[in-house]
Image (cartoon, rainbow, N blue to C red):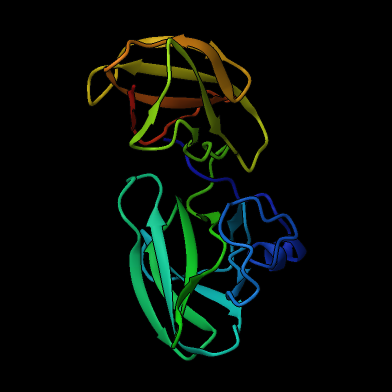
Length: 229
């Protein structure tokens, strides 16, 4: 997967990890949650401190949430499609975390309170790497059917959310069949849904979306699964 381009002058670099006004990464509307600040949502983070040829240290920051006893930062490597990794931050509202260069990540902050944990929104960013021509798209995220849900047939609509910080997504290749790693392509579309997909009662289906941008970069989503009544 191609990585990231360095295209900015000093003023843009200063803004690379600043607060973004558009919070479309999902999460919570709870006013008692921490409010994320940096790295900014759906941007390339350029202000990391180099640790090695392959890693840099990123400063994560957020606004305090009332009544919080401890904060935990959760970070997920979207390229590897692994689980979120927890980083304890204590009572601080910032934390330095060493991450791989040239890699897309998502993150959120969990505020531990006496009444329970409250999670922030989830944001996505690219950790800057070696300069290349374009960014690859973020992996598409299922909207419906949601993971492990049960739906009614005989047809369904597959709906997902795709994003790319270059805003140059060209198409989505949609795969679905009865295998845990679906290899049957249903269609190639330019919108974020595929309607009138036939399904069989009692069947279990697996689906994924491969997002392609105008430069030819491709990113596969996780595999999602659902059952039919």
